[in-house]
Amino acid sequence: MFQVESTILKTFLQAGGEPVSGDRIAKALGVSRVSVWSRLERLRKEGFEFEATTRVGYRLTGLPKKLHPALLDAYLRLAGVSAELHCFAEIDSTNSEAERRLSAGETPPLVIAASQQSAGRGRLGRVWQSGDSGNIYVSFAFRPFLTPERMQSFTLAMGLRLCDFLATRHKLDMKIKWPNDLMCEGRKMAGMLTEARVDADHVRDLVYGLGLNVNSSPLDLPTELRKTAGSLAHALGHTLDINQTAAEIITTALSAYEDFIQTGRGDDFPKLWKKYDILAEKEVTVSCFGRLVTGVVKGIDSSGALLLRDNDNGKVHSFNAGEVTIVKK
Image 1 (spheres, rainbow, N blue to C red):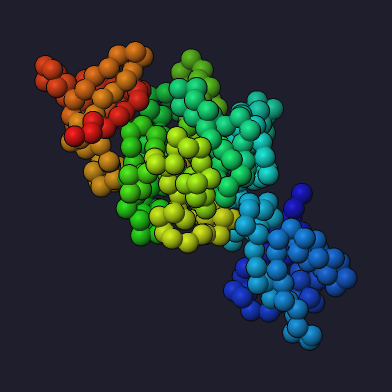
Image 2 (image 1 turned 135 degrees about the horizontal axis):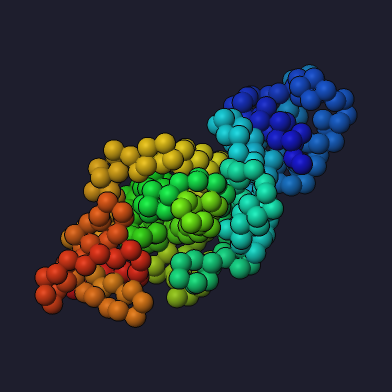
């Protein structure tokens, strides 16, 4: 659908800011120079900036500030990613779209990305705020055909890999909050939602969704979230190339999935968990199906369940799900 534009943009990205001749692009695509000019004009209207120099060529000088299907595809192709990409300006829910495509028999892995969701959802049936403010909403559709027991720590394993990537890539103090939040400097940067269709003895369809705040300001958020939510741009002090960032996140997530399928959560899981766990030895209250327990977090077990030492009786409880609130002193 956007293959030609993706190839043009991939050529410019490979040039690294140097001019690219119209002849080179035309020959690569097997079209006329007039057709190349027409495509560049269309891209200009979509937020790209090109500088043309006679007998030299075109230089890419500006990129759109929103997700652009062809540019995101170009970044992914440069990274060697072959998963099928579907990119939307707005959609009801990327997870829902991933589920629909799996149900329709499309071949995974599939990547569904959007700038905005009208019906985004989080854990426990909550609404996920998904405004068009420079963030990334992306879901991945897989068919792992693994036992449910093998998949129990999947979300945490994915979150750790993404947390480690963002911490390393941007030199940020990233943390993971059990069971599905990525944090930075005490603010929530991202949330994860994994949904699965399970047959009698194996997971058939698996959808992993991620909402990551990239270029939004806290002022873009509803009033009740402004003190608790953050973004990469807010933490770094500058905005990012939204399409390059999305491509990096997608590439990392697909690699993490393949590693999980091959090796489970991996030998480095305990080390990464110790490094990025924001709840370790903290006093928290866990709410689970109407039950409230306050105690000290003692890590997680082999299945990814949260271990909590009860303040009242010293008993260690295991939680496979729940809402965690840090007790303020």
